[in-house]
Image (tube, rainbow, N blue to C red; front, top):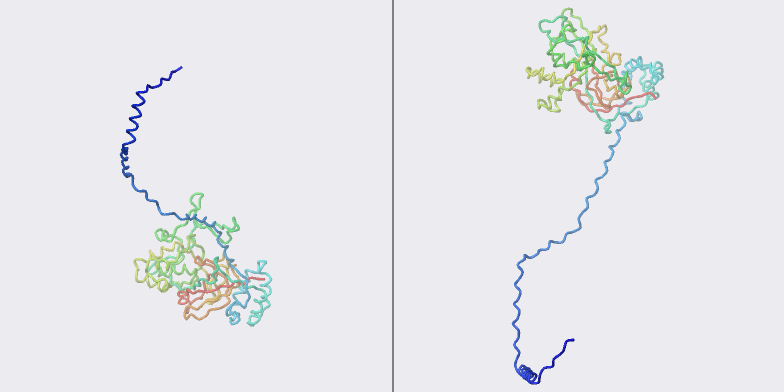
Length: 412
């Protein structure tokens, strides 16, 4: 075990003396600690408070486009402007011509049979007939518009010869032997009235020659007649048929539509507008011909814009007062026949047209017959007004570019 030693007395007295001495002396204060140097770190700047962050709204789900408006909407005869004022006796012969074809179809059979009992001299009786057996249908485009383009056409007269020579240098061709036509409706019923045209290359049908290609490689041996004006020959194709006075004999023959090369019809007037050559509101057959006369070197360039090419056949002309046959196969009646889009309007059907006359803008409201069609006639509110032959027909047809409404009359 560890021992504890006690101190001696003298040592204790000395220690007491020391302690007493200490009590009599002011104690020294310890030196203050040095202040810490300021921090060398940069000041911290707090960013401004951030507000609530907007959450992007979800994109709306794609909506289905509105369904297309029906092409035909039934209305009453009271909706037809000018119906009561039209002299329907002028349209009656054209309607009876349509019935020669339509009477073979079940839906038209009764109406055409009843027409045989109507007095053709009685305007009121004819009006009552249509109001009894037909329903007018307002034509509209898929977006609902009820106004469309109404153009005009006519039967022109050209000068020609059986043989090439002198001024007669432009051929009108017969249907070429190698042109193949396929009726698509016979294979696909939904493609009724649509045809594919071309030529055979081996076992494949390929496109037939365009206008430009036919100009470069003429169809030798297929010339029907030669005419003296290439521009008038082009416009004959646009009209679809015409008359030619033969130089050798003085006779006049009808040159009728026979077939087409299968290429789509392109409007040369639109091309002139796009090129800045004509104003949009100044296009007519007359202004196009004037442009060609002023730019003869560019004539074929312009004509080749339209790749479509028409082939013709010759018909006798026993009665000069009878119009050419339209697509229905019956003679057209001046100012009572129209060309329509037969994929929409039944060929042969009566329709009521409300437009204006190109000469003076007067109302042109009358019963017409859909007896023809054409490459440029597309859409439900679209019609080509047949002005006939001679007189002012060419002038009116060339300037006809009016807006109008169309109602198709269908049997009840």
